[in-house]
Amino acid sequence: MPMHVGFDDLLAYTEWERHEWYAWFREHGAHALSVSVGPHGDGRFATVGHLVRHVFSAEKRYTDRLFGRSLTDPASIPTDDVDALFQFGRQGRLDLLELIGTLPAQDWDTLQDFTVVNRALKATPRKIVLHVLVHEIRHWAQIATLLRLQGLTVGSHDVLLSPVLGGDVTRARASREDAE
Image (spheres, rainbow, N blue to C red):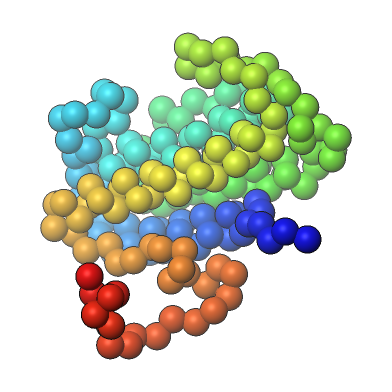
């Protein structure tokens, strides 16, 4: 039987990431959320807070689509309020977990039609859930980079250093190969 990483592993990793980021943002406050994403973006996001809201709104809105509900409008979620942002994220995650727990097995690989922004999209629920989880991981890395470029230390968020999938991490003297 081939080994694979499943949704449970990605859910566990993104939950750990959210916990780490929530604690970090609680410590650093609105200042960190107001860090600019820079002048070369696509114009959708001005600050890190906007990007965090986007991470959570993508999960919420794709789950809305898969449930056949009206799309949640995230505009009322303040981008400078750590607690409000992460509460929005918790609600979206609860909805995603409900979807995963209730979607009939035969529906996971059935193509569905969606309109996302200005694109017609055919995708399976399996692909959409995978997208939501990878999308989040990618954006947390982007957020970490933006904050580091502003001199803010965010620590390591690598899956290898997380408690997900077991293992243990302790400080040790780096080998020459690791240092390079």
